[in-house]
Length: 275
Image (cartoon, rainbow, N blue to C red):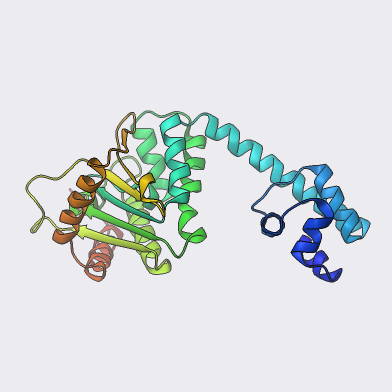
């Protein structure tokens, strides 16, 4: 709405920025709603762009709604463990994420019903906060289509879905399988590969994830545990990358992996055999 009003006034982003004391990049962020502004700053924009009273009221209402969402988000994140807040921030900045999970589905790939089952099974009570955390993570694929998100999953995790009969049962399993298929097909940045039972290693590392950045000094790996152990050790990051590559070498191709997920989904969609 601000962008349309600026163009109607014949101003560039730089010219609007000069008038209100903002840089051109920040004006661009304001127009994309990725930078929150205070009411006083919005008033400057309204005056500079000479918008109608109706448009001014709408701009103010939209800004107030955005501020309310921001406050709710901060409140929810305040209840999130400190180590996981760091992970959420890092995931948004990483140029690549390489993930390995053995018995479960990576958080970035979880649909809401599967995620809720995981939290309820673990006894977590702040489910609303947990949902919010996952929603932040799932936006990565939409916001950063040029990045690399590569997930290696053991067939054991898929088999657990195929055999699901508890805590939500088959419906949850089917939704999760379809969700992963959709993510891989909709987002070119998302690659999913399955390590099959037949060709997998005898021993598999605990779940871990490697995040890489433009500045390689920031690269780190972390293992999923109660405390979310994180390591920045330069020797440990290459070790995790090598372990991940080893899993990838044992995995089905992306195309074969999606076919396996489709097969599992078809099996879940069938009524269970009577006992």
